[in-house]
Every structure is written in C-alpha cells, then in structure tokens.
View 1 (cartoon, helix red, strand yellow):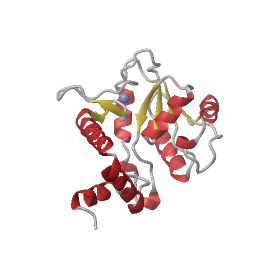
View 2 (tube, protein in one colour):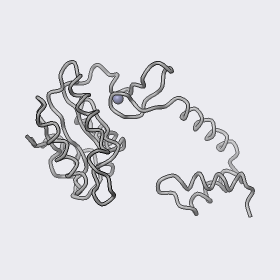
View 3 (cartoon, helix red, strand yellow):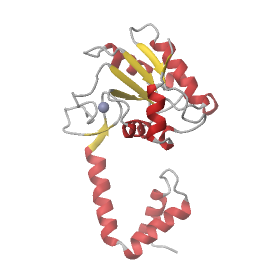
View 4 (cartoon, helix red, strand yellow):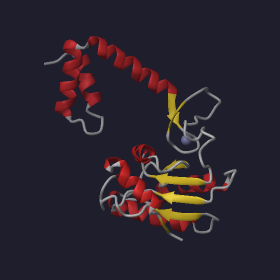
Length: 206
Ligand SMILES: [Zn+2]
C-alpha cells in the first residue's frame, strides 16, 4: 500500500529503540508526505555521522574521527583540565551524560557498554574488564580512585561487585555511588541534584 522506498524507511525506523511499527510508519509518512527538506537534511546528517563518528579509544564515549590513522578521542578524554586521577565507570553513554549534567564529577570515564546479566545470558567474559584494567594500569598520571556508577538494579549491583573484585589487586580506591537514585532506577532519568548527592556520598568498596 506504500511505495517500497517508504516501506524500507519504515522498517529501518522501527529498529530504533522505543520505536514500534506504528510510530515508524507515522515518522515515514510525515517525512514523505510533507517534509522532504527535513528528510534530505536527516539523510545528510545520518551520512555525516556514520562517516565521522566512532568510539573513543580511551573511554568508549562517542567521539569524532579525525583520520584513518588516529584513534578517536572524545572531548572529555581530550580535556587536560579534568582530573585524570579519577575514573568513573558507567554502563552506558546516557549515564555518562547524566553525570556530566550534574556537574559533580570532573574526572574521566570508562563506558562498559553493558551490564552483567545472568538472566539475559551476559557473563563476566562479555564485559570489557581487561580493557578497564589496561586503562588504569597504563594511566599517567596514575588513576587513584575508581567510582563505579552502574545503576542501582540487580544487574548494576552485580556488575559493581565484579568490577570491585577485579580491581582489588590494583592500587586504586574503589567506590560506589551512594543510594539516592531509586533502586531499580535508571541514572538516565535521575535529576542532577540526586546524582550529585549520590556522587558526594559515594562509599568505599574495598
Ligand atoms: Zn573518551
């Protein structure tokens, strides 16, 4: 009932998180029926992003790619005014952005990309724990504090415990966000004041 080019767009949009078939169809019809300029601009922006954005080689945050031989480096890792002795471990880029909005942390980050999840079959070997240890081992100046800011859910707590155990032999102080973010809650939706309180009240894990 729709031209195949529009159907293809519907199928692609439906792959986005939180977008079901009906919403995808609504977006595609909006663009195809009345917003061709927006559709072209969106296409250009997607192209530019796909070619010019990668994963920061140091922390896993989104970063601009500056050349084929230069590993991507994000603005946070490239900011030498930040406190390099402190490293905050987060599950997702959204969590990094929430902590940034709180202005309560001025160190560097490490993005895990996922949480330990026995129910979903995600085991310890699928977490980038070795990369995290390498990041800490090779740091100059040395990292002295690692703040684990995984969410206060069952998976988030299990991940925090695993990381604390793995980092125990290293010469770093390991701490965990204080409670305040509701249990099972998501850092992404916590307000900046709650996050800054949770950072200020962080507790040691070693
Ligand atoms: Zn980075």
